[in-house]
Image 1 (cartoon, rainbow, N blue to C red):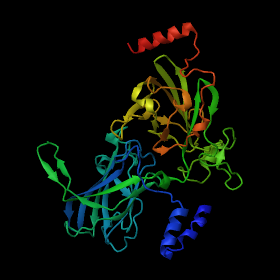
Image 2 (image 1 turned 120 degrees about the horizontal axis):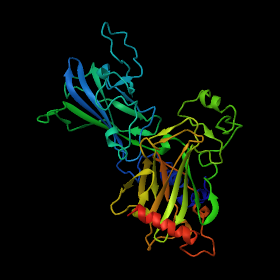
Image 3 (image 1 turned 180 degrees about the horizontal axis):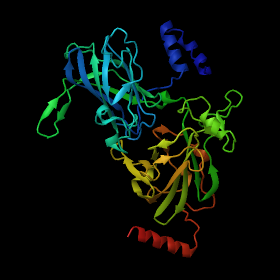
Image 4 (image 1 turned 30 degrees about the horizontal axis):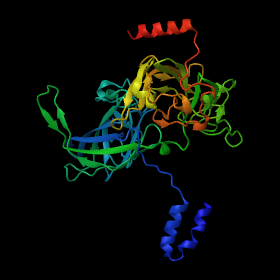
Length: 456
């Protein structure tokens, strides 16, 4: 407890005991926020919509659709898991496009047995290759959902559920409660179900509109603090004008501790590496990382590579140190003030993020399909890289005081640990403010010709 807290007690003598206690607690303790607000994606969420399509003799038939409205946070394999608690004694008679993970106790039913009788069912998506008679639109992707920017058509997942022992009118139906969403692990918190205006549907011939009997929405938001207590990625820095390579901060994602947690990391040349990955008994979602000083599953390296008269060039490398995880459909979000003058990116996709009008300093980068959208597990192939070419804005451009390095970096939506600013590679003391890469005159002319031809 902080010393100033005790010095303040004497001055509170005239306050009531309740006020003293309240002020004392508020001034002496700090609280960790678990709110899911994301400044770079303030409206990002996963919305779960239930549309009651028709009534049945003892309940209703509904189509449940999940929309991933998050710009850069996706759900990768093994996919989403959705749960809730029934308000009454409802059962699930059947499902199309998804399945409950447990049937529960259906012993009181004779003949026709429900698909699930649990009070709190847990539902997962079906796998690709499911027979067509068990599919509906936007189902059967193994629970994988793209981010809204990367692929909005695949940022949707749906299934159909027939609910029994439930209400059969708008007034007698009771909304499910206590929704949970794992994607695939923790991190999402869901609000209560809210009745909204019924969804309208356009028929296949596009000549008639139909309407759901009843619709309710559930909104789920993500918090990195809820997902994991430690970071999952870090950033290292280097430049052509300084030989110093600034590594990820030590213990950025944890520390090596073979005494209390043996096997928390593994050396790349360990002869038992394969058995450690396959036979540890831990979940595939539990990282098994290469032993490093930072102990992060992912490292992002930003290298200021070249400086031309009117342009400057950066190389970005993402390295996977996790032996248990391949990152499919990965993405990177980078904040830097020069992104409003990005001229070309060579082997990543790019999209400007502008959460606030007039501010264009944030970019989303992701892999090219079938080329480098798959980040392999730790090893020789466990990296992807690209180069970015920026046009200089003479009013702001400088290599001084670490200006050329990013302000923040996110990998798959998680904030990466940056080195402290005073450790950034700085210009040598004798260097001019705007230094040019040391190239021979012949190489300079050659580079200029290549550049002109590329943009002719």
